[in-house]
Structures are given as C-alpha cells and as structure tokens.
Image 1 (cartoon, rainbow, N blue to C red):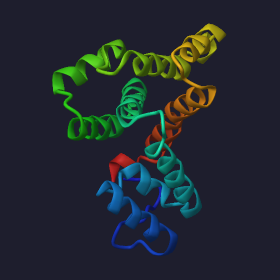
Image 2: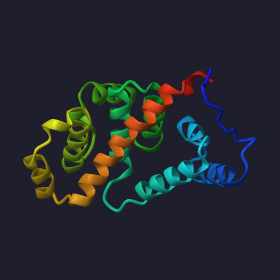
Image 3: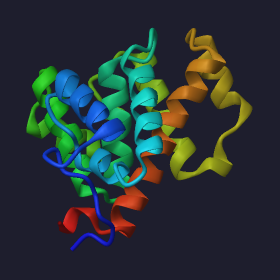
Length: 176
C-alpha cells in the first residue's frame, strides 16, 4: 500500500485537475509517477512544465529522451518506468521486444543516429559514474554539434529519472 495519499483522476480538483486534464489531452494517460506528484500540486505543475520543455525540445528528440528514461529506469530498477517507456517507444517507433532487450543489455545497440547514441551513452555515464565524466566527453559531444545546453539538459533529464524513481520506491507508489 502506498505510504502517501495521491489524487485520483476522479477526485482531482484545482491545479491537480488542470494538470491531469492537460496530461490526458496530450498523453492520454496520467502516469503513476505523475499521480505521485499530486501530493504536491505546485511540484506537479513544475514537473509538467519540465516535461513540456522536453516535448518541445528543438534538438533532443522523442526517441533519444525515451531511451534515456528507459535505460536509467532499467539500470536503477524502476520497473514501472521501464514498462511505461518501453510501451511508449513501441507505440511511436518501430522498436521490437528483441531490440528493447538488446538496448537494455547494451545501450550502444540503441537504434539511434550516431550523434544521438553518443548523447545517450554520455547521459548513462553521467548518471551511473558521474565522477568518470571528463572534459573529453563533453568535447566529443560538442564536436558532434551538441551545445552545452543540450548536453546539460539531456543529463538533467536522465538524473531526473533517479529522483522520481527513488521517490516512487520510497513511498511504495507501485503498491497501490
């Protein structure tokens, strides 16, 4: 059983209802981590603003961002997010179950352009072994025409998954 009370779609009011309606309109679902955020309507609204930023991002595309979320969730053992992002990738790309299994086993097999794959591998390095990140890692991405803003925002997106996954586990949200 969840350790904190979250707001259901049926009980949503005010700011939470506005956010839920917006999520239903754009994503057709209110993912459980977003329901968890309903405990704090202000943080929920901030989280949705952050997601909107990434959905409209001019250089970090859907497939790259979904791979980042999937692989961070897989590495840190967040099964809900693994399943959710796997489903998203399968709905909106041609990725198969076999290819998903392969990318979870070895992120270098991701079916992304070389430039995006380099960013994905950098983000994984930054969240798994942050002390190992060096200037050469950043320079390599810059040579591929990624900006420092892109590099930071991709790493931020990956690190954000850790925060949400940790809270999801801590408050036993999957155990509704």
